[in-house]
Image (tube, rainbow, N blue to C red; front, side):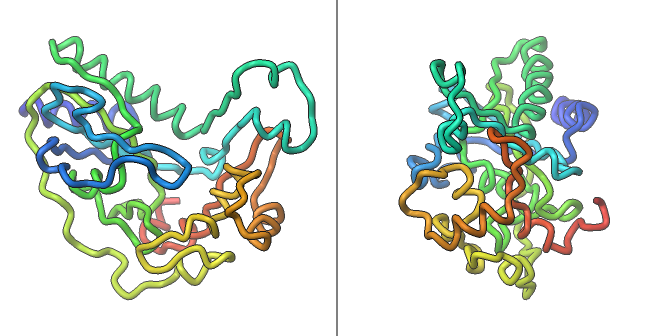
Length: 249
């Protein structure tokens, strides 16, 4: 068994459901820069200048609770005053916290073998995952994997180790299915396109955003669970509607 296969085996042992490898040349031309007002995507070389391989790992989200986000900024939105507001705003998403801990084990695994490596959530994860052979980008714009459908979350590890690359995924797993598009209560989805200001997750993340339509805000407040004043569980309606991988839940 070669080093690349050893590395993949380690990722599965750590708890990732799927893993693939690409390199910066294969990922060139993917979208990067400012994406709406949500985040900024980077090239692998911006994250690690001497990067030679990009490892994409998918974590199977087997319970809705993994989609919980805790955000201290929401205290202001509900009119609650707290000592935390005098500190820096803190925000945590459970599946990211879980994945970052698992990805740290992978970077440590590489470091102990003499390679430089870092974990990254800033490269274009979904499109990179397609290039790494993990699945296709579906009509809900999420990564659709053959075994788990869209029920995975992604993280990458960048390293200067030269690894064997995987073939890009070329099949369209959605085909004629429109279940996610039909299921979305705010009609945020068109096939392979998300209207971000119609998305309830975007609305929950940006409660004071002026570009969110009023009917979307009302549906978000009605349909998105809020376990505490500081938290909400991301909308997963389009994920639940996908028949691929449903038998794994």
